[in-house]
Length: 445
Ligand SMILES: *Cc1c(COP(=O)(O)O)cnc(C)c1O
Image 1 (cartoon, rainbow, N blue to C red):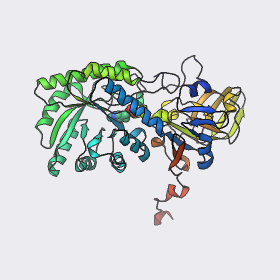
Image 2: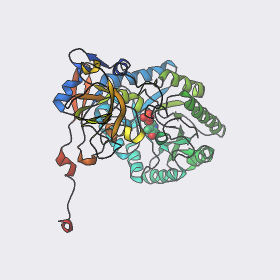
Image 3: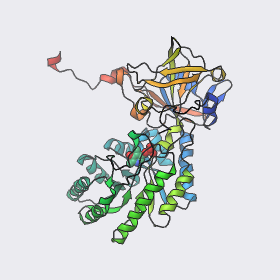
Image 4: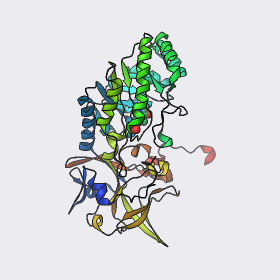
């Protein structure tokens, strides 16, 4: 919980220097201010306006490579399937594909996006608790690598659709291991009371049923216990239970080729250490090393969150007795995590002068008509003025994908940096686009 709650400890928030010092892809340049990889962010803010998302391609590639290296050096036959929902931009998906990752999708839209980005169907896994008939048909028509089934009801649905289409679905059953991931309640998925997966005790019977139904080829088990997990203990507990099931099922004569180990790897948003991929590889090896199974990993957040920032401008600074409100042009409709999960996001000025100036507490808010539209309270920041640029850090995952157009605010622009070059990867939505698909019926005229 500590990672997501708003600074519950007595420790002061990390300073601007500490926030930047612990993020190797960001640095202050004396003249250009905050630089991502090799690009001064002020350049992008001036050219595209704000709010604007910026993602570092070099950072994403490096994170994917370091995760792959960690599992490889542990000698594990593991393949990364990037969880598309964390950041589904086509350019991000291209980087994943080029880096050798497949995709974990949870909807028709994500499946189509992954294919549009050139990820082969044979590298796509479909997860999710409520896949529709139409989604199952698409998955079968595309002949994707694997469908992770989350209930007896879904198993029957899938068997019927596959049989009718004359296809065979490779299925893994998603186990709910009843383990508490120690994360925020809204992103915990592996406890018995959560809606996800199949109850542990029901797996053997259901696996046998899957093997007997037409149109299905059971290939293994899957699990995913939650998101923003910062300790290995819940992983070890969940994986140990899944490994027991692999042994039990094999003893029953079942075929188990694959274990999909899910995602959930946490990052340091404040000053907590993120999950170490070498530690995760150790836990995987400890539980599955001797089982002769192919492993899949489905990280989303860990790969992309640190690689993104949300650039914003100060609209005005509102002073009230004993309080300073810095009102930004970015809001909860752009980045909802603080409002939804009370998440911490570092906030720093782009100006190199402001970064070194005297700091005093400020509340950072957006302009939306909700008190929840607050990015941070009591944050130590320099004097800021209207039109100053700031960056909200670690916004590369569950940022743009969760944006809405609440308050008729168009979706923000997005750019990608790669070393010293950068490019626009999404135009700012126009106001006309907000209503272009609306119709006013005669009776309302
Ligand atoms: C959301 C999700 C993931 C990715 O979670 P992260 O915390 O972003 O790593 C992986 N697998 C499944 C099934 C998911 O629903």
